[in-house]
Amino acid sequence: MTDENELVERLKNSVTKHEAFRELMSLYQERLYLHIRTLVLNHDDTDDVLQETFIKIFQNIDKFKGDSKLFSWMYRIATNQALDFLKQRKNKMKVNSEELNDFLIEQLEADSLFDGDEAEILLQKAIATLPEKQQLVFKMKYFQELDYQTISEIVDTSVGALKASYHHAVKKIENFINSN
Image 1: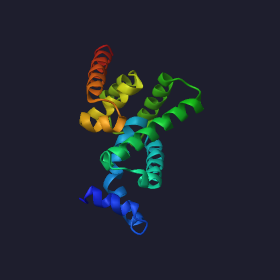
Image 2 (image 1 turned 90 degrees about the vertical axis):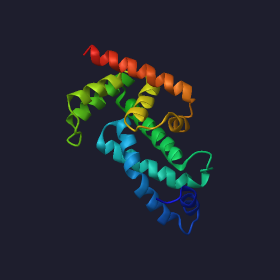
Image 3 (image 1 turned 30 degrees about the horizontal axis):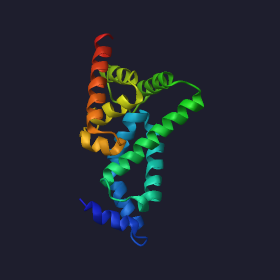
Image 4 (image 1 turned 90 degrees about the horizontal axis):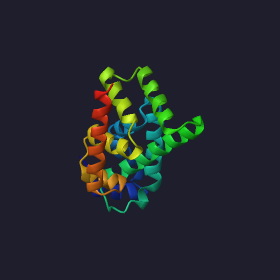
């Protein structure tokens, strides 16, 4: 695996930027895809958001200060792109968050690339009942298995607040599953 600082230097150098960016995509494409997929649920939408994410990373790499890990910075961009996508979809469809979540779950159930079972669909329905911040924290912790410190860097929230959000999310999901 390439040293992150060296990769960032190559990304910021106009001579090596394109080659370094291909390497960056190779290293992080799958992880970013999985992260975005947990947020937008649909494969085709995920591909679109992933492409926009990499464009944004490419355009803004010179602004990366190194205050956080490159991984965290890219995840923040991917998260923001996914949330912006969902907000635009909601506005375009003229629906509220709950209706959008219902629509996304219906799409997921019909998605031939989704390999989950009824339990997975029930979990997605439970997650859809959570407030947006709790959904985000739960998905990053549960599906991505990110630690609280990394999530804190990505969403710019304290570790304590994240732990509380995750705890509340788990309780609400348990209640939903037990009552359905």
